[in-house]
Amino acid sequence: MGSLTGKVAVVTGGGSGIGLSTARRLAAAGVSVAVVDLDGESAERAASALGGLALQADVGRSDEWPGIVDAVTGRFGGVDLAHLNAGVTTGETDITAVTDEIYRRATGVNVDGVFFGVRTLVPAMEARGGGSIVATASLAGLIGFSPDPIYCLTKHAVVGLVRSLEPQLAAKGITVNAVCPSIVDTPLIADMREVLEASGFPLIDVESVSEAVVDLLSGEGNGQAMVIQAGREAIPFRFARPPGPRAGGTVGQMPPKEFAAHDQV
Ligand SMILES: NC(=O)c1ccc[n+]([C@@H]2O[C@H](COP(=O)([O-])OP(=O)(O)OC[C@H]3O[C@@H](n4cnc5c(N)ncnc54)[C@H](O)[C@@H]3O)[C@@H](O)[C@H]2O)c1
Image (cartoon, rainbow, N blue to C red; front, top):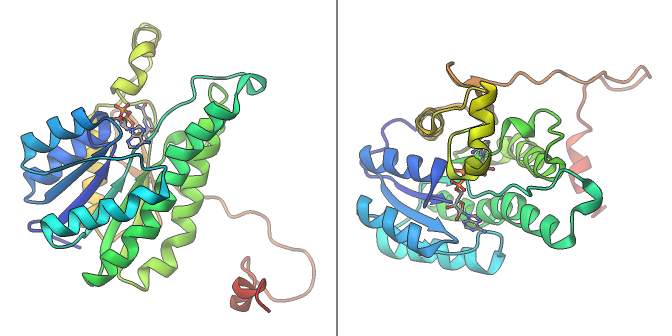
């Protein structure tokens, strides 16, 4: 996409942590930023410091997304960029103790918030001739993460969605990528910070994550899951190819393109 100056961005979870850092970095690059957050006060604080637009909304509610896009388009004339970043952990390791409420909250913010965002933003970006989307997944979207299995489930979902969307969004001039950081020093991990530090676990500086996000928003990479670890450059994850069939038939790992419509035939 190249230069970001004059573009318009939506950043969810932009009131704190990684989203706030992305919002600041985008604003410094000359982007008009809409800060979307469930916490209206933090959205307001962030947006007013950046000359942006604050929107209090729950990204996990599909009925809030048309209003988000309308408000951003009304204020800035359209949308080019999105960092779909709002997310929560469950705080529950024991799968038998995960209540419906805990499960729905995590899947609502982390999965629904990304899907509803993409579904609503793609037509708006298409109307501008293209755009760029980055979702915040996690290293827990690439590995098993036993401390929080449901969080891990949601982040795998985000990575799978991004990888699957790449061809259809590329055809519309829209890139879609994910960032997959290990543990980042943000308010999300505040209650574990001391334990992590005492153990010597290297926390990632929030600026390294927002730098990778903005690089993806301005770059040509597509369908990538960028691993972010403390003290090293962001690096695209290389997925191993699963074993193919050992039976006769067409070669390759994808079914024929007509398969996509198999429910309708
Ligand atoms: N901090 C880490 O170690 C880490 C590591 C990997 C991935 N992540 C992911 O990064 C993203 C940002 O996390 P962070 O560490 O900056 O946390 P954070 O708690 O500092 O910020 C998250 C923001 O999302 C907002 N939010 C929560 N639910 C929302 C909803 N339903 N609608 C709108 N906004 C909502 C919160 O109010 C908060 O401002 C999350 O998706 C998280 O899973 C974090």
